[in-house]
Image (cartoon, rainbow, N blue to C red; front, side, top):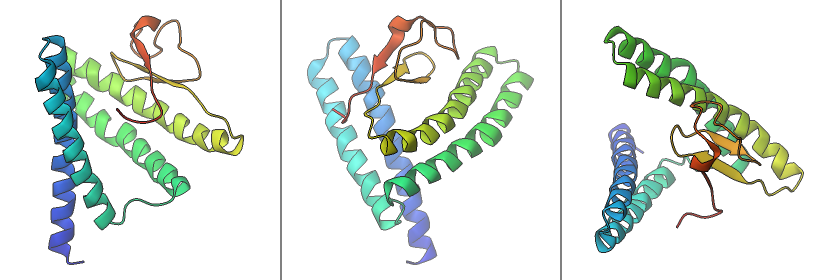
Length: 169
């Protein structure tokens, strides 16, 4: 595939992926404001954008077997946690933006924890275990197996955690 087309596929993937996240957040807001039909529309368009993103990944040949996908995801998490968020935190601190500094710190700490989750995932597969995951709705921390009394990253209570289902809605 030509370099320009490959670059365009990557740009399209990034744009579509951002749209999925944005639209899901908009759907949650519409739910909160009791605009059920608008929330449903946002979710439908988010699903559509997700299909576009998936098609880009397929053409880029970035979807591999599960073990390779776990390994690649682990490497990505390490890079993000060690490089990107450290510089983001430093910039926010220099600008004395305490809220952004806190959010970047939480994100870095959660990204580092993702490394452990990916490493444990292979163990779960080999043991033929079906793990249960819970996500902190404040900072994004993922608990494997049980909900902690308090989030180890942001300190939020157990009640803010939600269980992740097997498939997306």
